[in-house]
Structures are given as C-alpha cells and as structure tokens.
Length: 109
Image (tube, rainbow, N blue to C red; front, side, top):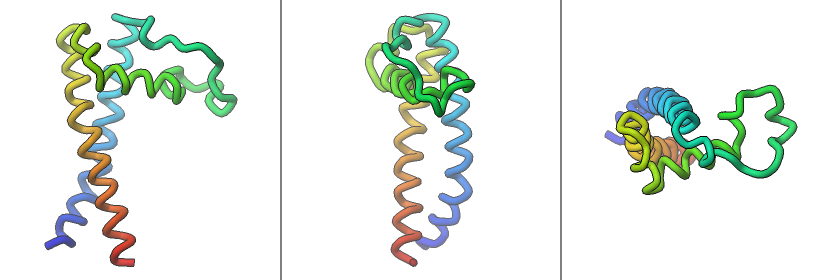
C-alpha cells in the first residue's frame, strides 16, 4: 500500500512543482503590475543571479511567497488573489509530498 503512495508521489510531485512555478510566475507578474513597492528591497542580488530575471532572485522570491501567504494578498484583484490562494494550497502539499518521498527513500534504503 505504501509503495503505491510512493509511486503516486513520484509521478505527482514533478507536476506539483511545475504547477507551483506557473502560479509563482503569474502571481509575480500580477504583483509587479499592481503593487511594485511590495517587491522592492535594499541590496544587490547575489553575483550568482546576475543576468537572470529578477523574479528568480531569492530576495524577490521570498517577498512574493510572503505576500502570497499573508493577508495582504486580499488587497489585490481577484485573479492575483486566486493565484495566491492556489499557492497557499500547492506549496504545503508539495512540501509534505517531498518530505514523504525523502522519508520513504531513507527508510527503505
């Protein structure tokens, strides 16, 4: 039984990650259009992220996730708030699924 759950997790987890990235990019775009001040931060991005889009900078990523998980997301329009609600659902499920996969692999050795 637990092996079937593991196989399901191995199939579903990459799809959840792809869904999360889609939701993140859509929410970032909506947030940048509606409330760009929420994404501003002091400091330069790491040299490892030079040349990459700003949305992949870890500081910006944490701000986007922070807004998605905070009550401030309700101040956005309905489509952006819908992306925030979906992130609130997909992120904990994918973290739990990743934890299960790690547990199963280490327990079975």
